[in-house]
Length: 143
Length: 110
Image 1 (cartoon, each protein chain N blue to C red):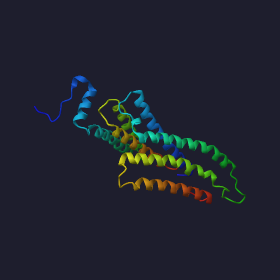
Image 2: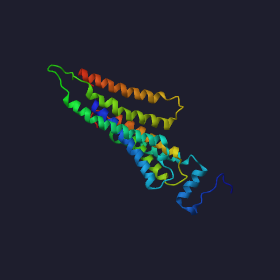
Image 3: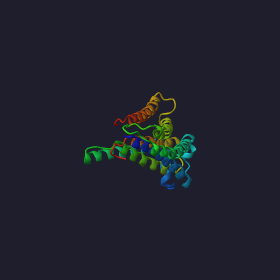
Image 4: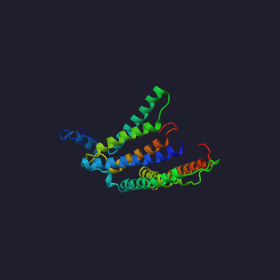
């Protein structure tokens, strides 16, 4: 899994979550359902937060795109002058997955579960993977 | 003949039978959803393994979760069949399976 695929995966996770929660809320509204996902404050909050995270991703994409196309490489060097093009993945897209994982985990296992290390370790693994991708790409090492 | 529960009132419509059943046995709805999930999940994995030799576990988990999710939404239109926390847990499982699916793609796949 390369950096492009990882970034797209993170964004698609956010879009998938928004689609699921949005569909459930509007399904309940359209059918006047007595049980509605909108009555759960945490999932409604996740819906709003995921929307905001992806909006931030959209805003930063424009800036980072100009940084990407303006990146120069000196003759004889495989290393870009700036790591700015990579900032878009860890700073914006990762926030979507962290919010999603925390809320989904809490809803399934509860807040008092001793298994909480699962979500902590999972988020740490994703952050570690992204950091390693940036380092290896800057050094010109293969995935 | 004495029953341990009140018999469903069959003259009030099919949905009332479900509501009366859930009233007598509250775990009926969650276990029905678990049954649907595993029928799709294990059935899909089994058939794909028979046909191709390998199975895409994360994809079948997403399909099973979405199937369960849709049935849960339909059940939520009638008061008394499922509770809000069941709907929330099904939604959370669907989201988690989506996370697994999107992070499980192989390099040659999108």
